[in-house]
Amino acid sequence: MGAWGIKNFENDTACDWLVDFENNSDIKILEDIFNQILEEKEFIDDEESFITLAFLELIAIKFKLIETELEVNIHFTLSYGLIEKVLLASEKIVFFEDHSELRELWIESDDYEQWKNYQLFLIKSVRDYSSNHNIQSSKETLFSKDTNFRLPPDWNKS
Image 1 (tube, rainbow, N blue to C red):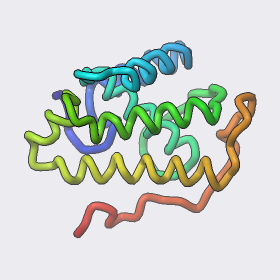
Image 2 (cartoon, rainbow, N blue to C red):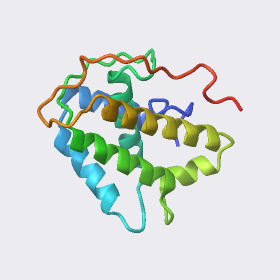
Image 3 (tube, helix red, strand yellow):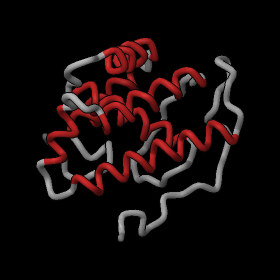
């Protein structure tokens, strides 16, 4: 799988995607990936899943919902519709009944529950932030806003 941790930028595919996205932050490519996942009825590929969950984490980083040592200097306009698509696609990756390749890889590891809980934390945090800040304008640039949400240090402790 090429992962060294449960966070979405702790794998090779997501890091490679981030470099590509820094050079060409084409939202249309991402929308196509999200649409493909949402329309899928049988099999969700792991590469598209890595990218989707990486973008979810990138949104959380830009909204300052989580702290990271990752340096991210990407500027792009983000719409409410795109946020909803990444949230729905992320939920499908985590819960798809048929075959989510990435989820199955994590199920085989000892860290599955931590990985799943981290994804659910990101989904809830981004959804709450976008709801609480009434983000609905497709022209609004969202990254100048701040919030008090932070990933608690013991988020993965029972």
